[in-house]
Image 1 (cartoon, rainbow, N blue to C red):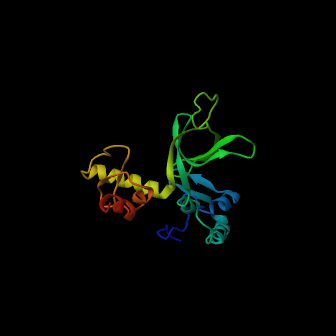
Image 2 (cartoon, one colour):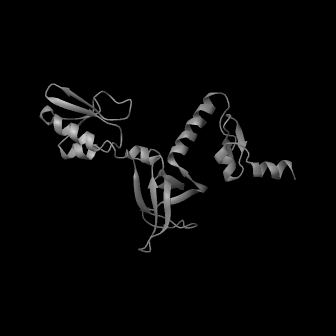
Length: 203
């Protein structure tokens, strides 16, 4: 197998080792670990003794139809942002658990970090211990993938001469221009939605 333009793991035998190149979140990785795979930080590949080549091929083939964890992360939605231990995270969920504790499920933009933490309720600022403080709440849930794409567009806009965001309430339109904040549908479309256009121009 060659290295993976199609996204599948590649297997190559080099001397006494068999190397497996995978993407982040590849479903075959747990099976490779069970076979005793080691991580080579220089080549960024997993490896085992070449005597296990057939077992490696079987493990990769068995996981071929399973979803990639990284791909599924694109569908992860977040409802806001939070500060925890001096770092910023995205909020997947926040509220009172069955135990009665108020918690938040936090994650990083790349989805590699995902954990639960005690959270401060709205207006609480004197909570002791390590707690997450909700710093921003979205009007509508957003996917991590859409946020990543939006950040890329922001960077492109700043380097292409559009300039930095005029203020926090502006968002980047699909044509690369800064637009005033409208409703959630305006933000989703990247332009003024039909309802807001009617309110402004037809009334």
